[in-house]
Image (cartoon, rainbow, N blue to C red):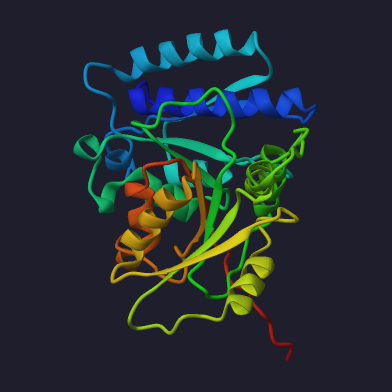
Length: 302
């Protein structure tokens, strides 16, 4: 939280999800996180203050906001003002699987890749990041048309990824009563309603042969984020993987994109210019990003 319109929009989106979870008797606590580093802190460039607000003014506003939200349910405010990298890494509570909801400002107001807070958070935290574009107004209903992208390669997921699966299953609880009328039109309408609205997507380029559908479906099962959600498979060729994914999102009318970030496989500037990083900055819909886990270290016994 930093008092910006993007942050307030992300908060509205988070509240919509929390209301949904609580209505289904699932525990959900809202935690407001504000990073207000001193000018000399190495992370200061990643978390600038909004124009016209001092740190003291923003802090007072956040305390007032947290107090108001606490009347609706459990809510806590965490302020980080020094040693940002260290304190951020300690922020997730032991045994919890927090999803961090982050507002993405318009491109004109965003810092460059080297100072973008999304990339810093992705590197520091093992928790999933739900990136909400400022232009995407928080809807009244939860997202139901989910798209999980894979690059076709194996992934290592952190333990916090299980919360993503639980969240997706909650979003897709279907309590509709469907009726079959007479005639072909009614049958076609019913079949359209039965088609899964969750899709697995993969975009390939001239440098890659079209993967067999069975191999891609096996990869989605291996990733495991979709759990037992029924889903279809969509593949497409495009000269740019990034543009191909954006086109598939429009074709599928998706309202939530998911993928695993390669912030460890592609360290430093390699990640900043990767397809995943660019999607974090360009996706027109909310994007749930799961940072890949660190590789397992094997110790040899003497």
